[in-house]
Image 1: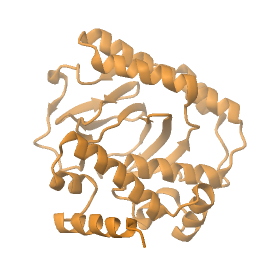
Image 2: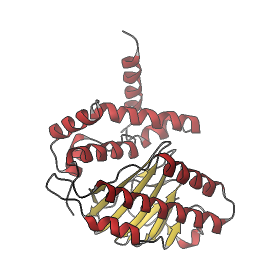
Image 3: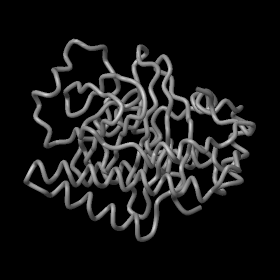
Image 4: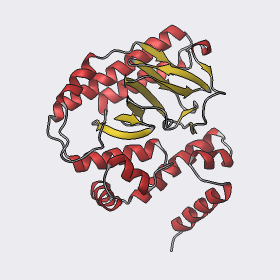
Length: 283
């Protein structure tokens, strides 16, 4: 598995693969806890929760995943449907290897997808898909909302299965429409934007972004600014502000919010907020 590079061609077989895969198992809030196991005996992993919806679909590899305070065994064909503010693992453990995971993040106006390879706990971007927008996005978002509100567990599971398989179809069609030639620079910038947003600015140091993409921080900064008209630091702060607003509306304590954003201490979080407030004051 290699990071995104200009000389790595688009793999036509990926679209065919997405067209053929099926969701064999759904793990969600309706899944009996007995199918998972207590997480007390495993190494500590970072825990995340946020106000957005995510789907993790397994393409390759077997691993354990922390979701709703329990460990669940994942294998190819497994879907983990993460509703707003449900706890789940952030990143991967050092022992996890040979994994190929497809992450879908459901934003208000689009659904973004990334294919992530994992070797020795280190993530590598394998593919950044074109966003699902317009009518398909509205339909899938409505079906997701219906699934979350559904009290009948089997109906909820089948609806989530349908949402994932329909999203995979849209991603596959998007790959075919794009064709074999891709703009590696734009794709790398798009991956960074998606990664920063999904992490809400946490663990997004330039050193980490260099390891993820295989590019130098200077090259990444140029690509990102050319693509979005802002610096990587500005994107990180915008993502943090969005999470802060959602978390405060949810009633989370400031200490919990600071930890979720990756600040080392409450004082560091307060310092960031003060500097942000000062920067927004009229001069």
